[in-house]
Length: 500
Image (cartoon, rainbow, N blue to C red):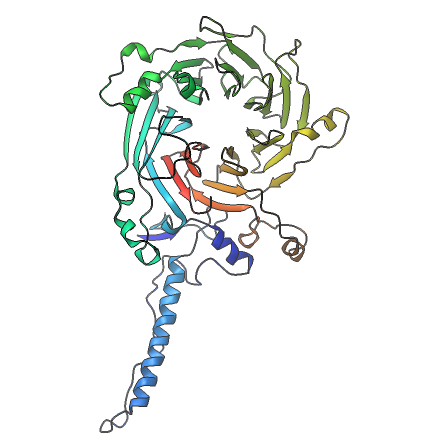
């Protein structure tokens, strides 16, 4: 079976921007056996005469040069990067995509029984800023099973995540090539909570580790909001041998304020340790739920209204305890304050002519909000300019990218680097972007003042492109800088690139 490398890295970008292809002129999937041009094959018309040493040396040199050229061509073919978001040509029958190992520090792909529309990273006790291998990551997710009764909430432990095997010729310390961090087998362990419907979106409280209470909220296909305490499930994975009692599978709360209207938007406050929740539905209603002193979750009796279509994303401000942003299929982003008694938005900005599917509030540069839309465009907005819209002024993004050709399904700032963004798209790719990279003005002028979107016109800020079929959601692992987890139609992909 023929294979196409599919990872597109900064080195490939450099080649493309210099007018070179990231590969050879031969088509992958075709025979690439070197074809000799006759040099090195000799027919001596004077069989009784011996060739001179000089002739032999010249012939051998020519043959060696020819073989080196053929080897270079073969190597070029092997390293051609196939662009998922910009396919040069469809995959031929019998061709599959293969990741380029030299582009990764770590790469693991994990199949699941059912696809998962959403997941979240569970903070653990293993420490921050982890750089060593083998690595361990905890996740919580909800399934989209073919039958409602087969669905579940799953708490997972991924351990034995080893780094990519390095080429000894490229390693300064060859002894490290046999270390356990390269040879360990990845292990998946899980604990399950049965549910009777698909989980559209799932989020865990950012205070779970601090409070030793892993509060996990789910937006269900039925319109209900269920809140679970998965601490027992997490502990059972952290310390094997501890069983999970049946009673631990019951939700702490099952809220029906959305009255059967399906929804996808949900977010925990990053500033309220006891737990404060926002949920939004397809009718354009947003509910604010607080936790009382006795531990009960109490939603407001009336919703926030103002959107004319479904709420696709909700994001609490990382700096203001009462402020949040919403993104909607009506193409707008709105800013709200829960103290507003009339439950109306404070500011509203048109950010897209299509559905705004996702948004991410920068956790450290708190005036920046990233959004992604159905038309494949994702951008970054300076919230300090949103007040211009209230007086009839124009509001423009500080950055906007049209690289993806299909809907943006996920966007998230890197918690360890406030200039780096991960983007997922329905085109089957996860892209990593560095907004600290400035656009090459000479290059832009040479291309007529803008990017055409072709393979040779990749934006300067695009660092990496990774294949994940049917990617739904992408998250950075905060405790492991540079590590990304994505969920798609086939399961999960966990990776760390050499670019981040």
